[in-house]
Image (cartoon, rainbow, N blue to C red; front, side):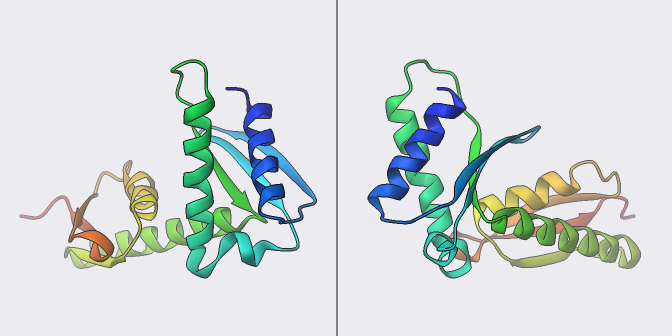
Length: 153
């Protein structure tokens, strides 16, 4: 499915939700395509702690999966006014700070519980660091990332 077709699905969905928007920008990146919705009604699309944005991403991806004609995987996310981008940057910075703490103290550190997407961001952020490794512990909403020092003796 083309990015323009996905953009049309997002437009249709927003119109059905009666959410006005200025435009939808398509941003191509190495992690996939981002559809950036620019709107004055961001609070409705983002929701409490991004819950509505997570739901919107899920619904649009389900619609795309049902409509696509070929089996090719389409990797994309939807963002609203840069909310997700800012949250990702904050999470990456926090993960790096925790990793530095792990390296200086030579102790494992547990982060606060996170969504699966947030945990993936942390794992990806620290994947190339040779001194730490990450894992997840807990279940459901209490699942969190543990950052471990690799060179324990």
